[in-house]
Length: 381
Image (cartoon, rainbow, N blue to C red; front, side, top):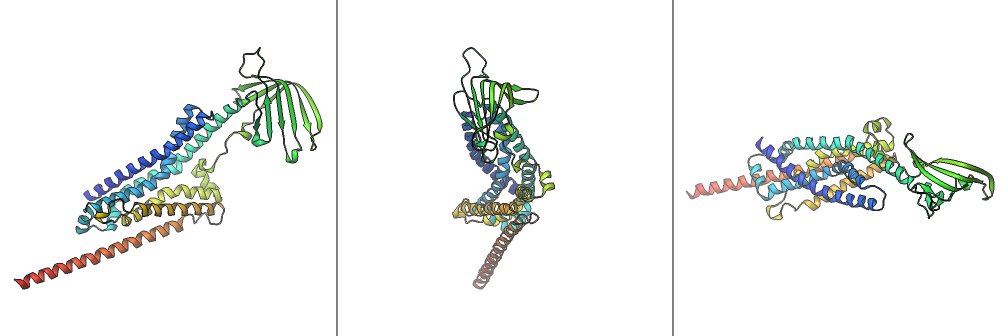
């Protein structure tokens, strides 16, 4: 029990330190990215920290298996370097028993990882999309900057407005207005809109942005660009269609896990297995970390970091490849990542078997040498 608590504490300390370092590195990159967007006026300063806070659980869920894997590796490598592992082996503690002793922290890490990836991360992604949509709606209202042509609706339209007359003090008042829009294939429903003045306003009841045009014309064009119909108006109200132009598209990462399970198409299966990979990979990574951590005292505790990272990168690459296959329905969603887990388990068991056999041979050699020394001592006597 004392050894188990000691080992779990060592792994917890190493994993927490690695997770903190990796989290600081990746979150700082994201902060720089958000600050750049804030400098360009795409998001507000308050929104920067809101999005950082919402991205944190997503990042933790992504880094947790790697931190646990490297934490186990470093903790046990230090035990080998300090000859503590030799003492444990001489007292009859095998590597299989070490894995059993580490099951408590492995279960805790798997539960935390599962809670983060299955529930917290989708919720955080959904809130992030809502913030972006709200910000995009505000930006669309201020998008009509006077004095320059602006493209909207993914390049199918161009709008231009003049400066507001000097007599008005309203920031939402605009001057002459021009809009060209190509709708339909080959411009079959193209139109031009002109107006002597325009005004932007936000309807709080409807929670929508509107544009009011005054004293203008709407020209409907045919395929040759000739005017097919002309309509004169005194006031023309248009709702700014944020849904089509600016509002971000929801990704499947924001879909609740229960909905993924009910849908069960290719994309849903792929996302579901991606989320489950975090808790399910923890025991297999533990199985690999214990035998991989074996080092000689002179090699240092970081001797196996590079091979371990290569193995983890290979694991992530296979996860990504299998995810693509499941999305494309080249692989059944019921199978998921089972082949990857099976290969990891086989490699871990094989390494443990080789180490156990090597320890057995070494102990037999020591016992034999001990018997010979004892026999030689008796003969001399």
